[in-house]
Length: 520
Image (cartoon, rainbow, N blue to C red; front, side):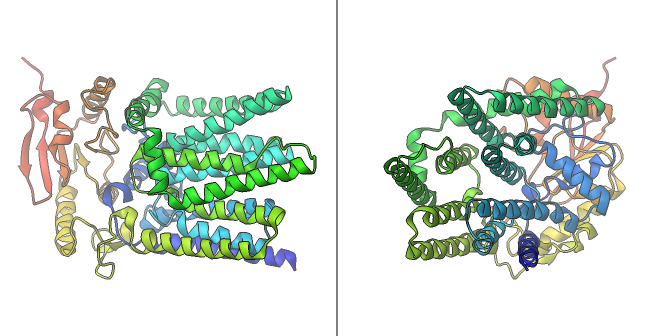
C-alpha cells in the first residue's frame, strides 16, 4: 500500500511538473531567450561545438544536453521543451524527497513539491542557463545536507558533481554555491580537526575536473579558449556589475522586491534561535550543522546573484521550499496546528500569486501586457516549431506582419545560404534551413555581456576569434534580422568594407568580401 502511494505521488509530481512546463512554455516567445539553445544544439550534432566554433560566455552544458535530446528524438519544439520539463521534474522530485527527509509527511511534501514544480521552470519554459544553474546548485545543496547527515561518500560526490554541472550551465549562481559549500567543508574540517571530508571533496572535484579536461582535449576545444570565454571574460563583466552592488541596495531589495523572502528568513532565524534555546535548556549538545542557517545563506546568495544579474526575478520558486522548512520546524519544536495552517495557506497564496504573474501573464517573456488569446501557430513559420503559440511583445497586434516577414526571410535565405552566416535572435532559422554554418557568436547584446566590447581587455581576443571563424568558413555574406543589424559586427572589420543590401523590412544582406581582400 505504501509503495503504491509513493508511486502515485511520483506520478503526480511528474504529470504536474512536466505538463505545466509544456503548457506555459508554449505560450509566447522572447526570441533572444526562447531560441538561445535551439540552433546551436542542432548544429552540435553536425560537428560544431561551443567555445571551439562559436564564442559563448555561458550555457556551455545546456547546449550539449539539448544536443543529446535532439540527437535522440529529433530537433523540434516539443523535444526542446522536453529537456527543461524533465529538469523541472527532477528538481520537483528532489525537493519532495528532501522535505520528507526533513520530517514532513509524504502528502505535505507533495504539496510543497508540486508548488515548486509549478513555479520553477514554467516561468521561462525553455532550457535556460540561469534556471539550470540555480536548480542544479540547489539539488547539490540537498545532496550536501544528505552527505553530512548520513556521512555518505556517494552524496558528497553527487554534491560536487551537481555543483560542477551547475557551473557549466552558468557560472553564477553556481560559483556562489561552491563558495558556500566549500566554506562549510573547511569549517567542519577545522572544527572537528578531521579533514577526511575535505580531502574526499577535493579528490572528487579533481576527478571530475580531470574528466572534463579530457573531454575538452578529445573535442579539440583549446583550454585557453575555454578559460578566456567561460572564466576570465565573465569575471571581467561580473566585477563591473558587483562594484555597483552595496549592502544598502540589498537591504532595499529585501524590503521591496523580496518582501516574502525577508519575512520567511526572519521566521527561519527566529526558529533557529528558539531551537538553540531549547537545546540549551535541555543541556543538549549543540548541533554542528543547522539547516536553517544554511538556507539563510543560500537565499542571501540567490538574492545577491539576482541583483548582480539585473534580470527578471527567477528565485521566487525557492519560497515553497522555505515554507516547507518552516513547517518542518513547527512540527519538531512548536507543535501548534494553527501555525501549520497559516504556513499552508501562505504557500497556496504564494504559489497562485507567482503562477499568475510569471506563468499566466508570462512576465519573464515580457508578455504581461499582451493578449494571450491572440496568437499565431508557429508551425506557419517552421514545422519544427509545431505546438508553439507565437506571441511577441515587439509585434503586439501585428503578428501576421512578423510571420509574413519571417516566412519571406526564410525563403530568401534558403536560396542564399552558401558561404554565409545568419545573425538573429530567431535562432531556429538555421535549423529550418538545415544550414551548417553558425554565427561566430551565440548572442549579440549591446551591454557587453555576450562578447567583449572595445573597452574590455579581451576585445582583441574576441576580434581575432570572430575574424578567424569568418575566414575559416570562407564567409562572403552576413545576413542580419532586426532588431539586429550590421552594428553588431561591423566594428570588428575594416571600415567601409561592408556593402549592405536591404532585402525586406527585417532582413539585410551584408557583403564582406572586400573586408578580407588581399592587397596587391
